[in-house]
Length: 231
Length: 231
DNA sequence: ATAGTTGTAAAGAAATTGTTAACTATAAAT
DNA sequence: ATTTATAGTTAACAATTTCTTTACAACTAT
Image (cartoon, rainbow over all chains, first blue to last red):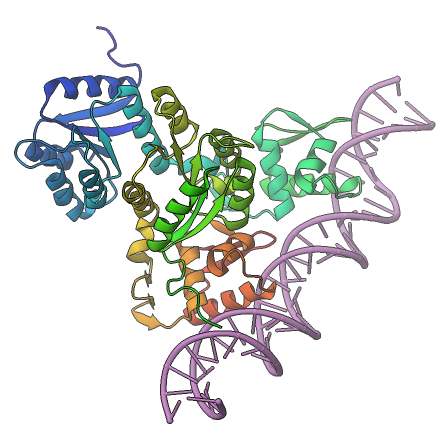
């Protein structure tokens, strides 16, 4: 048996509701190729049903649909706390200013008029997803070590370790490219800044403190050159 | 001296960059009537400058501008962590599919083609703002602490605690992202505003008052960096 | 062995934050 | 307009933590 999809639903779940089967199929296909997991509905009531069943991250609603139009569906969903943060995009042939405004004010995140290029639609969806997914950007994980720039903390083997600022910056620098040897000069520039002049032993002392606090010897000295991080 | 504005910057700060003075003026006017605090720039470099100065929540960038076009400005800003979450909208006369896709992939949150109705633009901006302001909207519950932005009150262990305005805003900011370390600069910008200059000890004093009133030590000092909230 | 480099411990400098009280600004009330 | 209360800011100093230096030991390669 052949593998159907290389990519598992990494990107997110999307529900599309439209009464035109063609549109449903074209959009589905394109979103699936992008790695999204796609569900479909061909009228308003089905849309609500599917939404509750699959809890999609994003819902594309045709405005003109049988059995509850897109606006109605949006209103109903938005009333429930579970769909408070769900992204909703209206997709419609109605190229009318006041309708667009109504759609956006009803709680829609975007309003796109048909005919729409699948590529543009996908770009817009990616843009919206980017915004809700952008959480884990600042956490760096290397083996048992976890460095969080935002929380400014370091966890090693499930224990939090307190590093002072310079120590943290230094470790963050070294771990930003494991294995790479950072020259003493590079370290000075990155951690201390270009205009600060500190003595020769300062870096060593900080390295020592980090080694001490981490316990393990993750920082290797490359004599005459610099230091590198490796697990 | 007369009071200049009835409404203080409740809604949010917006920077508009466009080389056509007419557009700048029309959009500014409309956004200001909506309660937004508006800054303007007439070329790319000025846009970057103003962005750094005022730290807007949203930036509208004309694509075709002298001295760095909109895409370039976006790229430069997105490189800096401070502008990672800033909403960026491209506004342009280029009604071209591939350009739109490029804009969205560059890190833009929306791409709007001129001519644009001010009403629609505002609807779109409101929609984007709604999303980032959402968690700010209602009641925030963290452990025994309950913060109501609307009523402006704080309940801790079932007892209401009265916080003065600055204290409240500061606590609200810190709790908006528990665990995250807020730099002193960030705090100054968010709570005091970009143009206010206050002494070094002012933040400390307010932190102290909050700690005092809450009893528990929920606010942790990260020396040399800032403060973070954690239960 | 010698020169060059790095590791270590302790001390003291420097920077940052905590605390208090006094002062100023602002808004509400008389 | 003046008073009053409250909020916000500043200044001075204490407390604390972080950073740097110093002096010397240990190590490595020529």
